Image (cartoon, rainbow, N blue to C red):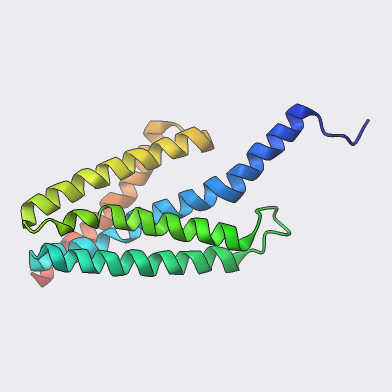
Length: 170
């Protein structure tokens, strides 16, 4: 048996490397950013009814979470033993994904009208959840509906906590 890789085997290994080194870190970041930033943003929005306060809470959270996740991913594994690639690249991808996931539903709070900002943010979150579900289904072979239920469950838990905190404060 030859040690030369066949085109099929090489492409399979290339796809696996792409999944481990690019898609998985991006997905981790997007999920973290999309879910973990919900609580502070919505707690502030519901407590104050001031969209600009929610915007700054979301901006600070998205930046902080992005930096935190970049370091967490980059420092958790050099990539040499696991084959997950450069720690710097994975950390950068995860951090950027986290920031992106957090900033998307923060931007609607630039709208000065409270109700309008809240409605647009909820629509953006729905689009985020659908996109995350599609990515999971596309790259990880999970069913779209099962992925949506999993991601939406996490979002619902966080939304409940932030609504309770925002209602208690406001």
